[in-house]
Amino acid sequence: MRYSRTFILASCVALVLATGSVVSAQGGGATVILENAIWAHGELYGTVATPTSFRNAPRHSTDVIYSFAMNEIQGQRSVSETAPGDRDYNGGRWNVHFAFYTAQGETYLDQDGDNIADVELTSAEEVLAEEAAGNLEIVPANFYFVCPLLP
Image (cartoon, rainbow, N blue to C red; front, top):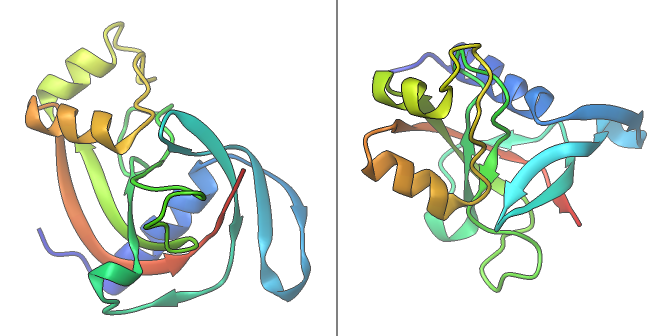
């Protein structure tokens, strides 16, 4: 699948907005999102959405974040492969990967069919296990942005 830069930028904005409630603004154009933000290792982290994006970052300088914002089924927050305290955490420099529910995944993850996920994934390992089971398709977005996680 190929996506336009505008589509990816809009999707990444949706990623940040879909992660939680905006509770206050900070100087320099950053918005603090403290509630229901991003899952990592089974824990929820708040985040700071900055107006910073970049292209073509080396893999070792970014971490993967799985965004579910492009699905019809709601209720699944973004999931990070790493978090503060991990030796390989890159300070919130993200390489966005879209996680799309397959038809099988929609049936499994939204068992009552109300378009709200009944099962919420809370770690990268769970995301990858659902991909291996055929419930998700993961697509690199080739978009990078900065958004540090807050414990």
